[in-house]
Amino acid sequence: MKVLVLAANGRIRAVERPVSPWRRPFHPDHAARCVQSRPITERFNHLNRKKRITFNMKTEHTSEKPAWAGRATQIAAMALTGLVAIIWVYFGRLYLIHDPGEWRIANQLLGYPLYIIPLIGVTHILGGVGLLIPNVPRLTEWIYAGLSIDLLLAFYSQLNGGGSSWDKFDPILVMAFVFASYVLRRCVRENRWSI
Image (cartoon, rainbow, N blue to C red; front, side, top):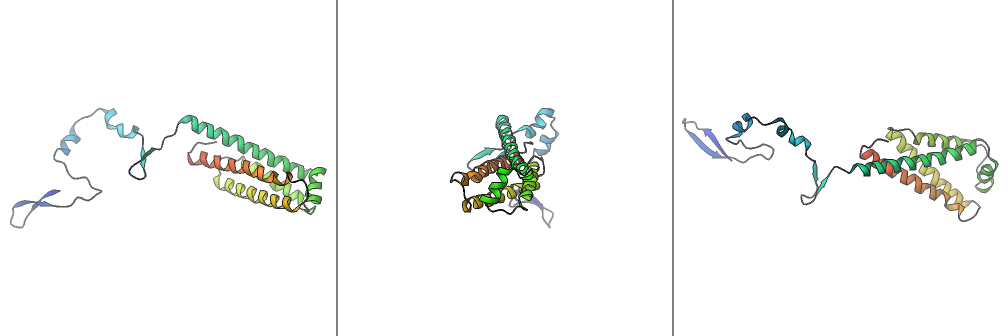
């Protein structure tokens, strides 16, 4: 870029200078372009354009998603999270009301001591209710971590305990629902579609 410089002898001379990448070079008719009056719609056109995110300078991806995709993801996240919460609260209630079938499975087949079974029921109810609380991402992350640890330990207990071979994979089936609920809720939160 050529720049006019006033020399020590009083003469003006043109000097070539590199242009910094973050500064636009001065254009002679820039002032004339700024003075020209444009309609307001043209002045704010840059605000209405789709923002493009460029990754490798070869492919461009738009950051806008269709509205129906967001709504479908939101509905799926709500349905799966509600299902997991209902299952969790239901089994916690069975542990708390001393259901004979659940207590027999927990005590005799899995070998849990009797004093720990009501505590498991309380934690199941708290986890199920905690999943339904919206807009508290840190709490839901901890709840999902607790559910995952609980289900992994339940699977381990089922492997070491008695019972049929199909009963041993019940915690893994529930873990699939918990994982799907977690992934969909993260997708909803990252795309800022509120539940």
